[in-house]
Image (cartoon, rainbow, N blue to C red; front, side, top):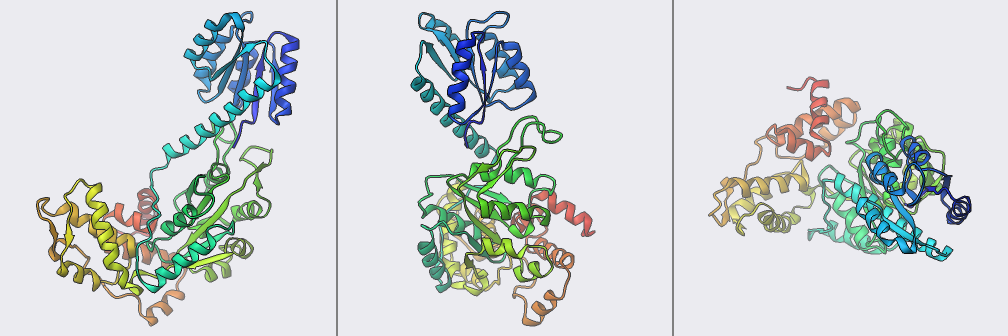
Length: 451
C-alpha cells in the first residue's frame, strides 16, 4: 500500500519538470500542471494521493489551493514548496492542513526523504480507516485441554512460520477465527496487519470492492478511492471467513490472486502486487459445495494447503470447564461485574448440554448469566444459567443422513429455525451465532416466511 498518483503544481517550468522527473523515478504516476486551478480540477475528478505545490503562484496561491483541496479530498497529502526566507509561509500552510514542506533550494535526496515520509503517512491513514470501520475484535487465546485442541495447537506451532495457506473447517461457533488469529500471532507476520473479511455478511454486489477496493467513480457512490482487504493485509494475514459463501463469479479472481499475488481495483487497470498469507474458514460440507459447483475445486486446493478441523464442543466436553473459567473471568471484566465463580451445579448443567451453537453459544450463555444475576452474588448458580428447552442432543446418524439429502435452501432454513430456537428467538444473538448480520437474518426470515 503506497502512494500511486501525484500532482505537481508550479508555474516555474524548470522546477516543475525537475519535480516530475524525480517523482516518476520513484515509481509514482505524476501529473504536472502550472496553476492551482488546474490541480483542483484534477482532484475533483480523480483520486490524488499527494500534491507538491509552490506557495507563490498567480491567481491561486499554494495556501488557497491547500484549503480548497482539503474541502474536496481531505485525505490527499500536500507538501508545500517555499523559499528559505519564507518559513512563516510553511508554518501557515501546515496549520491549513499541509502534510510537510520543502525549502528551496533542495536536492533530489531531500525530495526522496519527503516521499518516504508521505508513503508512511499514507499507509498509516489506510490502516486507521480500516480499523475505524472494523467493529469485531479478535483474540488469539485458544482455550481447551482436550486431545483435539492440543493437536490443533501443535499444528499451529508447526505451520505458523510458513507462508502456506490454511483452511480451517468446523461448525459455526467452534472458534475458527480464534485459531486463525493464533496462527497470525505466532508467525513472522505478527507485527503486520491481521485483516478479516466475513464473506457471508457482505452483499454480493459489494464483495468484489471489499476484497480488491475500488477507484473513484468506479460505480455509483464511489466518491473516493477505497483500499480493499487484500491491499490492507499486505505483508500480513487475511482471514477469508466462510469462504464458501463467495459468489462463483468472483472465485476466479480470488484464484488469480492466490496464484499470481496481484489484482486490480474495481474500475482500475493497474496490477497491484501483494504479499498476503491466506487463512480461510468454512462451516459447510466442502465436498458437497464442490460437487454442486458452489465452490471451485481448484480454488479450494489452493486454499487447503494446511487443513485444520475443529470438532464441535459436544465432542470435546473436557474443554467446557476451562472455557467457562476463561469466559467468567473475561466477561466479568467486560461487563463491570465483580469476579465470580461457577458453582458445581451450574457446571454440571453446562456439561449435560449438547451445545449446537458450540463455543459461541457457551460464551453467550455465560455472559447472560453474569449480566442478569444479582451483581452482589459471587457464585453463578444453576438457576442463573438459561438454556433453551429444545433438543439437547446432537443430530443422530439417521438425522445426519437426512440432512445430506436436503437442498441448500432447506438446510439453511432448518439451521436458521434451530439457531433462533437455541437463542430464545433473540435475533441479535442468533445472527451472531450464524456469523451474519441481524439485517441479513431478518431478510432470510422474510424469504423463508419464518415467524
